[in-house]
Figure 1 (cartoon, rainbow, N blue to C red):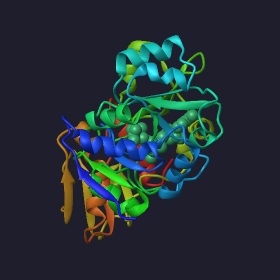
Figure 2 (figure 1 turned 60 degrees about the vertical axis):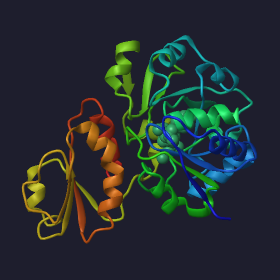
Figure 3 (figure 1 turned 30 degrees about the vertical axis):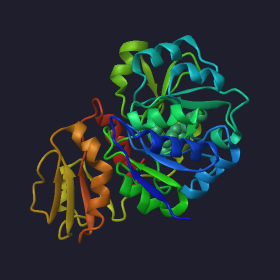
Length: 325
Ligand code: TXA
Ligand code: MG
């Protein structure tokens, strides 16, 4: 089977293309589509067989649950028990890069939740994602559309090179906006718990619901299955510039370096990608990994960003891409 790749107009997606993709979703096929965060690999979230084919196409471990995507907050009531606080967060932040973990209703297949008693839900703001979900008329289960372990795709070409003919249709809506995945929070208990830092800064969530609890290391692996696995890794080793001594270390000195960051590196390097701000760093991080790994370099060195705003999510992705906790 050959993958169909359609270019779509971001602000005004062509109805005939959206209808074809929505029909594919309803008939159990896989459609990759842009969201404001990264590209998703979507299937009918209520169709167990279709959802399993997502795991096969990505090579994803079956114990890592998926996010269900909706075109309106009201539609979530079919799949989850929505409490007051979740309702408030939806009002303020949806559509947008915030995923809520809620108690699941029996209609959702176990393949989506990995057998957990909760389900992750979000309403993306990208017009192509919205149009597709609306036209499909079902929640769309979608992980990031990369091969398991690779950087998430922020462009359609990365979906094609990772998933190839494992996906039926790719909607190419250009580069995504945020560049990192959504923030995932658990809102089932007495306090709001951060499971994955992401596109929605924690500081903004705290303005609405007060303190958000950050769970450390081992406890997090239990609550947020995705954090158990090495993820986001480029094909060449990644080192983090946290401390200036790194530049004299044996892992770096004398090596052909590809550099990414906001500051200029203190040494001359053969390849570098400099970003204007933390937001641009987030937007371009995964694409930079994919660009640099194709160049003639031995290692990538990445600047360690400040911990504020999008910086928390950047730090998380950098650590995991570098194989550090
Ligand atoms: O921005 C995004 O969130 C993108 C776009 C496509 O929407 N999707 C995405 O999906 O990043 P994925 O599958 O790559 O990451 C989903 C994360 C994983 O860390 C997973 O473990 C967690 O959400 N998750 C999903 N369901 C969960 C649940 N019921 N409880 C706890 N964590 C859950
Ligand atoms: Mg992912």
